Length: 571
Image (cartoon, rainbow, N blue to C red; front, side, top):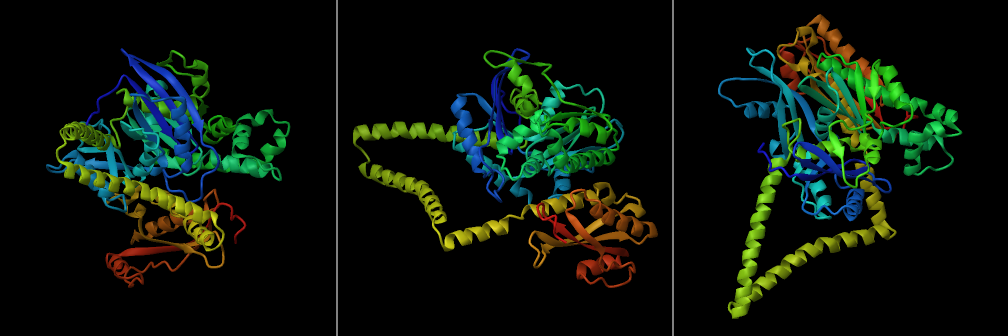
């Protein structure tokens, strides 16, 4: 990834699921300073089944932010939610004359279900302490270009042209590495509204994982606890932080405790998975994000994880100056940490070499400069032409072409307005739109199931060098709506395991225990469904299964139901 020219003044803009968080920073010699900071919360609730980056609240909040803080000529580094990025560990062994990037690209192609032309990707490999070994571990990151374009569309409404765009967990890593004490193995949990980003750091190495749970889980539990009174999302957020001062504190805590323990359980499981996967123990955690101040959360996490949980209270190496209020920055530091990490990247002080879309943006900005130069030259030529009265027919055709282009820009706006008017009309239009919303509402179920399956099938068990009694491959995963039961899906998983007595038991125990032990109770009725232990049999799943049978593999098959949140009463 090419290095970008760094500016002495930069804005870090963190576009999260609930707010726009911005920090303006400057490099004064070797001193890093904060000149301005602000948080603009989203207003209202997100529309159902909104694609990443298309939430109308994003550009509404951006308009308010730019109204308060004109960006001028400052560079802008944008942070995007960790949930839209694919992050995978990789092991690269130098083979022949292949370059490092070629080897990583090959590994990435094994992990994503679509072509690399549709994604932006980058990687970081860690130095191997064994100088003789040709193997290096690292992380690979990828995101869909389509999703990036959605966010850029919102930014374009306020005429923001970002210099860089980065994954929020990587920006958080910049902040943590620059500001916190990492003298011992450390966990970091950044609790956002819809997701929680986990970082595990040991020496120069780091790993990350995004969990599909966040502060919105507790907001929903609070709104349920206060019924029949309807709390607004803003009221529920305030109560989460100030629950200790409520007169009904005991009653409310009793009602939300099951949800809080389930939430903490998800974080605990994520931390344990990272510790086991990377064979590293941790005895402390830094807590950041909007959910860090949730009443009782730090204490409960400390009890569940058996480690110290620390909420950073101030900056160590960055100085607020000028009109910015140091007390505001300190009080909101858990919320501003990612934005500060983005600012560090824009100032050339990042801790990671990964820059997800910097090269693309450099190319785009270069093309913009060329286009502007061409436009200026054409404008000058046009002025001369008008003054001399030459090329009248050319001017006419140019004006006609410009009018056609303008009409092409206006037409989508007219179409959008027409759609809006149809939505406001009673009758068939509303019924059709409601059907579309119903079809799209459950798209997230696949992510939930795939996340669980990814935990069942850890990467090390898919390597050829894995022990025979620990190998396990996913062969097939299916999911469909359960007839007559809204909000419930029927799933089936097939896995292959070598012909080995212990591997048979390992495969069955791994799948059944993982599904039965899901703390959110999303998986129900887990049953074995026709597993085949006789390797010579012709498997009934077509040529693929038959070929696997000839290679002497057992077939392990389980069926299960997936119950969406809010449908816990389903059988």
